[in-house]
Image (cartoon, rainbow, N blue to C red; front, side, top):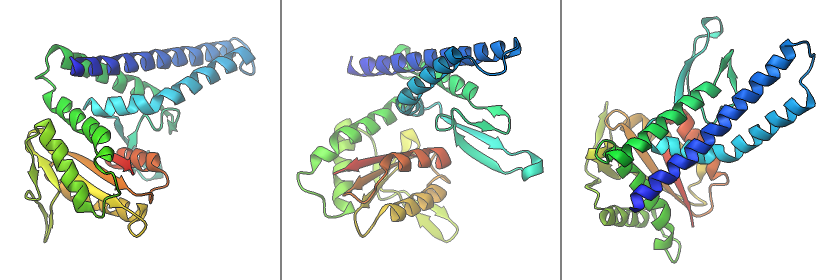
Length: 270
């Protein structure tokens, strides 16, 4: 019942967000129609309505993007620049770039599509829990770490190993079938060894410890290296960062890793 309530809450969140997107698209279309009918500039009423809806979307987009990501349906778009400017390929988080225009390509319709797909995935989870069992179990792990890791420490941990031990305890309580410090991904002469792997979810879990002498730039460099190695063997990567105050903008770090690498990063502040 708890799982069903949680999934229903995410469906309601995404449905409300989808309604906002639809209203925003209608407001843009109305403004464009008024311009075609001879107006030189948007009317004040059109501007106010567009600004109001855009503000509401900005307030909801962080939660909506996280809910879509955790549905397992994805939040990214692979985009290639026109050949005339080099034809470079980019991996964009459409939720982070919702109001952007990529050389004439409006990203808002992609946000609508991803949101609709996520709603469908959550509805399927309710009707047939076994259909999306991997996504549901990954959500369980993310939620449990978010909820339980910080309370596990009365005093700040001394090192990364202590954090790993508590993450392992969380996985045990969840009943997750995991392997610790054994699986490797060989890349040339180098062997990448994640802290935990969950074979049934095609998931590698890596724990990081951020402090004054091992700050945000060090953690980010390690994440980039992990992505390069782990993605050769596992489809999904979860990075758990326990932070003693070294990361000034945790939301930016989470967003940018999702945007550039498609990696879920949890930053737990002590």
